[in-house]
Length: 116
Image (cartoon, rainbow, N blue to C red; front, side, top):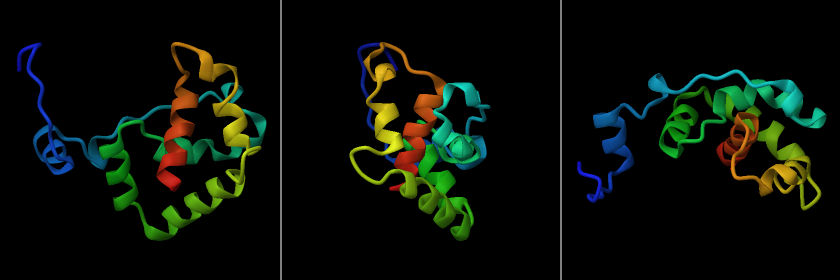
C-alpha cells in the first residue's frame, strides 16, 4: 500500500488477515491515580474490555462468558446514569480539551462503548 492509497476492510477481513482478534488484543495496566475515585473499582473491567480498537473490543466482548459481559454492562451502566454521571464528568472535564489523552481516559471511554 502506498501513502496515497486507501483501503476499506470488513471486520472479518481485519480479523482474518491482520489478526484483529481477542487473542491478539493489547494488554495494559492502568494507573489508579489517573482515574476518578468513584470509577476506580472498574479498573479491572477497563483493563479487560476497554480496548480502543472497535473490531478487537467487539471480539473480546463476543468471546467473553455471557455472565461476565452482563456483569460488566451492569457495573458500567450503574455509574453511567445521566448527564451528571461519573463517566460524563470525567469525559467532559479538562482532559477532554487536550490534544492527547491518557491511557486511562481512552480505556474507560472504550469500556463505556463495550457496555452499550
